[in-house]
Image (cartoon, rainbow over all chains, first blue to last red; front, side, top):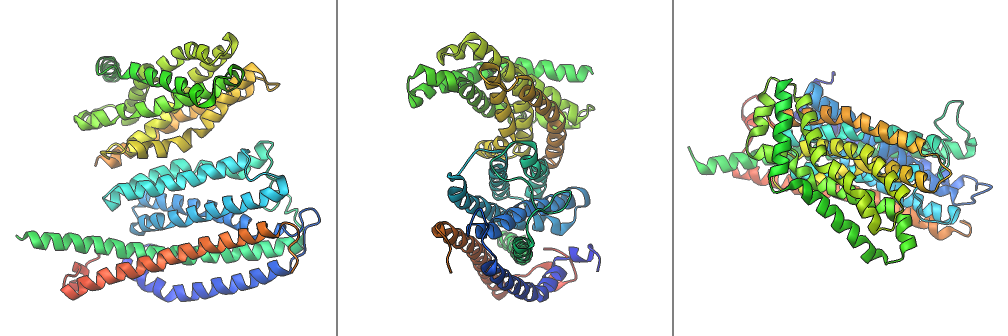
Length: 244
Length: 222
Length: 59
C-alpha cells in the first residue's frame, strides 16, 4: 500500500481503527518491560537512585525533538506534495510534542536540583529546549487562530520548517558550548559511553515512549479527521438553512 | 531595478510621513529604558552592569511592535496584492520593504542607543559597543520579524500572535548581541567571537527571512 | 525499595510523567467522544457528506 493510498481519509480511518488496539497493547507491554527494567537497574555510583529520572527525561527529550521532525516532514508534505493527510499529521503532532517537551523540562529540572543544586540554569541545551517549547506553543496558537484549515496548514508548515533550525542546535549545543548539561553519551561517533546496565533500560523506555507517541499521534489524527468532517457538515447545514 | 527603487522610496516616504512611525519606535525605546530603573532600582552600578541587556531588550521590543507596519498596512489597502503581481520577484520586493523598515525603525534605535546609555550610567566605550552590536543585530530582528509578519499578514488581530511567533526565533540574536556588548566592556572573552556570530546570524536572516516570507505571502494571499 | 536521599525528586518526576501522559490520553479520548456525539447528531438529522451518498472523497 503506497503513501497515496493512505491519502484517502476514510481508508486511513479504517486502517487505524484496526491498528490502534495493537499499537496500544504494544505500548503497554513495552512500558511494563521498561518499568521493570528501571526498577531493577543499579544505582549510579555518582548520582545514586536519581539516575532513574533519566529513564523518563531522556526519552521525553528525544520524543519532543522527534515530534518536531514529524511535523517538519508533514510540513514538506503539505507545501511540496500537497498530501492531504499531511495537514492532519502536523496539527495532531504539535500538542503531543509540546507535552513531551514539557515533560523533559520538568523532569530535567527535578533531576537538576539534587544533582547540580539548581532547578534551572541558562545553559545552551536547557535554553534551546525551552525555546523549542515556546515554538510548539506558537505553532499551536497559529493553528487555533487561522480559520481555514488549508491555510492554517500551509502557514504552520512554513513556521515549522523555519523552526526546524532549532533541532540541530539542541542536539549539538552540548558540544558547541561549555554547558552544565552533560555532553552527548548515547548518540555519538565512537559509540555510546553508558554502561549496558543503564543503557538497556534507557533504550527499552525509549522504544516504549516511541510506541506511545505513535499511538497517541494516530489517535489524534483520527480525531482531527473527525473534526474536519464536523466542520464540513456544519457548513453544509448552514448552507441548507440559507436555502437556494 | 527601477521598480525596486520606486518601492524603496515609497516605503521610506510613507514611514516618514504617516504618523511618524519611525519616531514612535524610538519613543517606545526611551520609555522602556526609563521604566527599567523604576523596576530595578536606582543603583547605578547595577544599572551599568545590566545596561547592554536593557538596551537590547528595549530595541527588541520596539522592533517587534513596529512589525505590523511592515506588511499589514499594505495588505489592508491592497498594495500588497499589487506587489505580488508585479514583475519583480517577490523575494526581492520583501527584501526592499524590510530594508526600508530597518532604515526607518531599526536605525533610529541604533542612533538613539548611546543617548539612552547615559540614562543607564553606561560609559562611552560601553555605549559604543552596544550601538555597534545593535547596528549589526537590528537587521536580523527586522528580517526575522519579516517572517512572522508574512505568516500573520492576513489575520486581523494577529499582533500578539506575531510576537509569540517571532520572539523565540530572535533569542539567538539577543543572546549574542548582549554577549558581544559585555565582551567589549568587561570580559576576558574577546569581542570578535560573539560579534562574528551576531553578524553571521544577520547574514543568515537576510537570506532565510525573505525566502520564507515570500512563500508565506504567496500562500497566505492566494 | 530504597530511593536514596533524593526520593522526593524521583517520585515527583515519575508522577509528573504519568500526569502528562494521562492528560494526553484524556484529551484524545474526551475529544473523540465529543466529536463522535456531534457526528451522530448530524447523522440523526439526516445531514451527511457527499461521499456517503455518492462516491466522492470529500472530508
